[in-house]
Structures are given as C-alpha cells and as structure tokens.
Image (cartoon, rainbow, N blue to C red; front, top):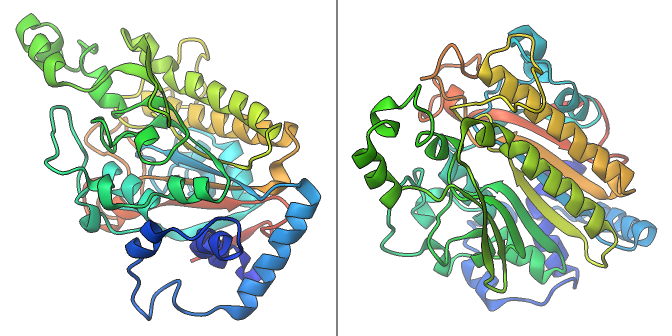
Length: 388
C-alpha cells in the first residue's frame, strides 16, 4: 500500500473524509468544486481508495480518532537549504531534524509552489490556482482589496471543521488583515500569530537597514498609519480577537518563532486530550528577510550568518514540534508535511537562501517555484523514499 498511499491520500483526503460519512454534504462545497474530467479527483482510483479507507479505519480503531494533520511551512526557504536537498552543513546550517523527516518519510524532489507567499498560502487553503481567487501577489502594507476573495471560497480549514477537526493556524498569515479575511474568519477555529511577513514588521525598527524610515519621524508616522499590524494576535472563530505583545525591538523579532513554536507545542499537548482530531498549520516567520538571531538561543549555525541562524532555528523548532507529537503519543496518527512557500529571496545575498536552479523568489524560473517537500507519517509512509 505504501507505494501509492501518500500521493493519493494528499490529493483526496478531504473528499474521502466527506464521502465516508464523516461530515455532511455542503452545498457551498459542491458549488465550489470545478474540476475538469481529466483531473483529480475525477479520475477513479478504486484500488487506492479501498486501501486508504481500510487503513484509516484501522487507525481510527487504534487511536479512537481520525488522523491529525500538521503542516510546517517555512517562509522563503530555498530548495537547497536543508541537508537532505544538498544543503545543510555544507551551506552553513545543519538541519538534522528536517533531514530526519526525509530519511524516515518521503522526500519530494519536484515539489512546486507559487513564486511568492500570498499566492501559495491561498492555494494551499483553497486547492485552487491564485488566479481564481485574485490573490496573485503578496498583500503589502496599505493594500486594500475591493472584494473579499474569501466570500465565495471554501477553505481547507472549513472542510476539516465540517469533518470534525479542530483547526489552528500558528505564525505568519499574510493572506489579508481586513475583517473577513483573517484566519479565524475563513475557517480556522483559532489563530495565534502575525498577519504580515517578518520584514514588514522589522523594517519599522531596523535602523541599520532602513534608516530613512526609522530615523525620520514623519515618514515613520505615515508608514505606521497604513502599515501592517506588528502585534501578536490571538483570534477565535467566534469573532473574539486579542492583540497581544507588540514587536518593539530587533530582539523581539528574533524571539518570535520561539514564541510561536512553544504555543503550537502546548496546543498539541492539550488537543491530544480532546475528542477531536486536529489540523495545525504552523507557519514560520523565518527565514524571510530580514533574519534576526534569537538572543536567548545563542548561535545555532556553523556560518553565523543571520539567514543561516534562521535556518538552524527553524530546524530546531521542527524537531521540537515532532517530539511533542511523539511525547503526546499521536505521532503514528499524524501526517506531517514540511515545505516552503516559494524559493529563496536573493536580494539579501550573501545572507540568503540557496537553490541550485535558475531564478529565485518572485520569478517563475525553477529557483522561484521549486521547493522542499517532505511527507512524514510514522508507520504509514515507508521510510527513506524519494519521488519526482
């Protein structure tokens, strides 16, 4: 079964759950499915579907719940940054935890994203090309949309909620800050993170990189008037939204990913004791430029470059999140998928990511859209596999 299990499962998990009686049919969902006859999920896979249903039923009998799903999305990590893709210690930052996922899971060598973050993140949640939603480029400070693209969309979080899942997004959102476009407005039960990208927050406090903005009170006031929200936000599906700690310094920015990872780990511990399975989309702030070392962790990389420090810290948190799943006793009942939202940002070179391909973030060349992709599911996905 392992030969075909993952590829079919990842394409068909939500429709399978719905068709298996785990959630009620939704007219909104039916209306939103626009699939050509020659595309998934129209092509029948009778043998695979039977095998997956059998395995899911076995897991449910063993654990009493449907499988959990954990997405780990890094911001701007290059294809060649993890050790298992030719980087790691060779390029200045060892990634033992990411490498372990690949060694014990399935490494995808032809995994593709969009060329920038907002399009990729919207595609992950809608299952549709960004041109369908209009979210074709990053939403930047001061941007206002004329139409809320989520009004006619069905999100993955909504579908999984209907299937009985608790849904949580931790970390970077960057798919809209306006009411109606926030994570807890589009299907997530809970959101704990930041609406914008790391650089949008740090540029108002980094006088070294942005002296013309930070040291000019008039320009800074104008920017803050239309700029991104630099507060940690805790939002809930019922509408409650709390603005927590503000990023006031470079040190605060450096600590952000540790704060977010600690929250995800604590939620895993709590959710394991609940009746519902969980879907967690953990989105790292790093390694989007500019990267700032966490002052509490010390140096983690061999090269000491800020970007490489970010890669090493991401790897540390990946390991801790997987350990939390194992400690909670749910690792064998959890599909973990690790990836990046686009290729590396190269305008900060040499303090930037690595890809062996032409192009980088913002381009549709291979270097801009080909990203790491690792699927790990202990006991279900056969270890040590690679697929193109």
